Length: 322
Ligand code: NAP
Ligand code: GLV
Image (cartoon, rainbow, N blue to C red):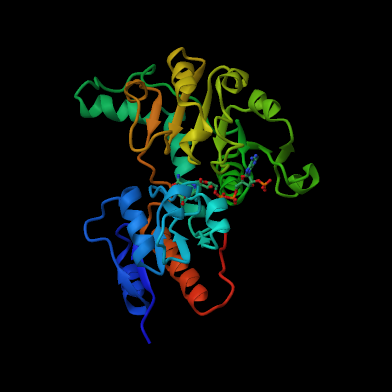
């Protein structure tokens, strides 16, 4: 019996590629280059399944091209905003993602950005490497204390909760969260104050960390008006998706000093970063590495494989999103 053909759009950790090659006729990425719309349409036409990543534009147009052979897309990632899931569902294409296994590592990345932004770590490191550091002095590179401050978590799902736990237990922060689904009583059980008014969270927080997915509803959730509701000198952390924030408005708020700093892992038009953002000393910028540990990336790949195995064995897929 012939094995299902599985096209993998990017290089994956070795253990994952080996498992894919064992179980399927795996077409692994030869050069780790993004396939683009035409390459993806070809993959859908020639394979039974595609293992996609967040840079693959699986739009309604690409999904709807004929002929198409693929019946399942296993996204390597918890976010799947690159896939038009409504179009996939209408075409009978199953879509899966990889939740949970990257939660702790992504929460660590949010804390990394929070601490780096609070303590102006990027500025200090740059000064040192450029040979401009003149030695210890009492007023050099002063940041703000994290301990005892208030963190506002927007999107109280897996990663938002893991960040809240770190902030409360590790750094003695007070945490408030904005959630659609959690009641204040449920929040209280986790030591977090749940509010249903986003403006209230913004007005009360010294740090704000974003953990909602990118959807039509969350696009520019943090816009110029919401930025103006934040405390003067507050710090914004985004490890969710770039388009949750109006990047131009954020640049303006950082430039005029209304916000003290931002820590960003994600951008509106990745991998393109506005020159104005790159020029800001109070922006700590990482290249979308929230889940970039060998442990998380291997677990994500193996979970994507589990989803494919279940699909081809006719069992319910564990992480179905369409
Ligand atoms: P999750 O468990 O599904 O949590 C997302 C939360 O957002 C849920 O609590 C949900 O609230 C809330 N939410 C969704 N839509 C909302 C809306 N319109 N308004 C208000 N709240 C809304 O997901 P997760 O595993 O924590 O991941 C969150 C996101 O992080 C992913 O979607 C991805 O974009 C991003 N991410 C980035 C990296 C990185 O490398 N930087 C790594 C992993 C994930 P309800 O409970 O009320 O539905
Ligand atoms: C990474 O950004 C993911 O959504 O898994």
